[in-house]
Image (tube, rainbow, N blue to C red; front, side):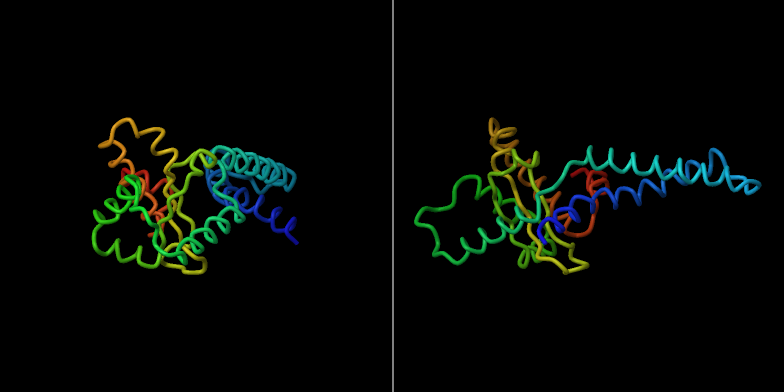
Length: 196
């Protein structure tokens, strides 16, 4: 059963990308060379060529986008965070990085802070593995089908910005806002257009 789930996960992103690529490629092909209905052979050739172009474009798009954390990794992080939440408070106070994340949350507008009351912000050391500063895992505020999580990767943020405390603080805030924007339903392109 788990191998079937793995196969399904492996094809989910390429199929989504294929749908977007199909629309784009189909529109471009239609505009460049409108099909003639005079011959079914020409139409079939056009459809086969378009399908091949769509699949190649989808696989390249997914390859360039990279993969987010696997379902197993999300479950592991979720289980770990829930285990830590059940423990008594730590003997030592939160560290400097934890304080940066708390400050970033406090700087959010009130309506966005209220969203985080039901969406845990988890600090992780797996940023290098995922080539990221943060991740949003969930189904957006509009569709609550999955448990939401925002992950802030301490290792990559400190690696790239730790040499300057002000720069690190600014990037932690930017990363948190970026992931909150995903939680609100913005795609990667839309988030970038927001300057995050």
